Length: 165
Image (cartoon, rainbow, N blue to C red; front, top):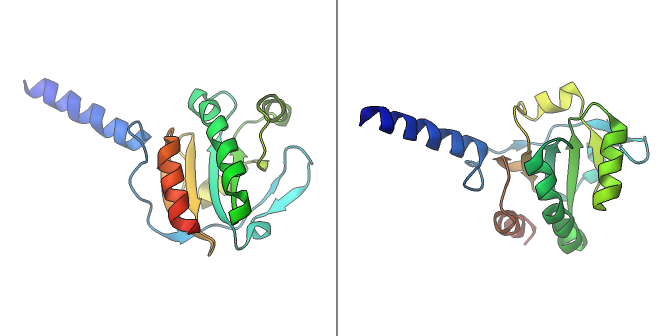
């Protein structure tokens, strides 16, 4: 019986760490790190300061990650629904090939900015060790939540509403 309890505890811990049951535990508040990253579509550098005074959902993803691709329709919907309220989704791809990311943007009709990650941005956000990993940032530039793994649309809507209202 002990062996089963041990494996159940291990499984439950893994689920909580990966966000299998929704949002991961709350992230302690910190300022969003500054960055300047290449926009996939334009090739221009986009600085984090260009999002000043906006609420953000910054999501680290990859084209080869099934949960990441599964989240895209929800992210498109969030961008459409809350953009006029000073909110934006920001995609940061950890892929190596910008052309593959560009193809995904066009195929899925992604309507939010997508940039290519560099080593420093993943480190500066506190270490992104798995994907998808998302950070909810309020309009003051403070990271108020970190999510690991796929996050249910209803959870994101609830949390976004809390920071824009």
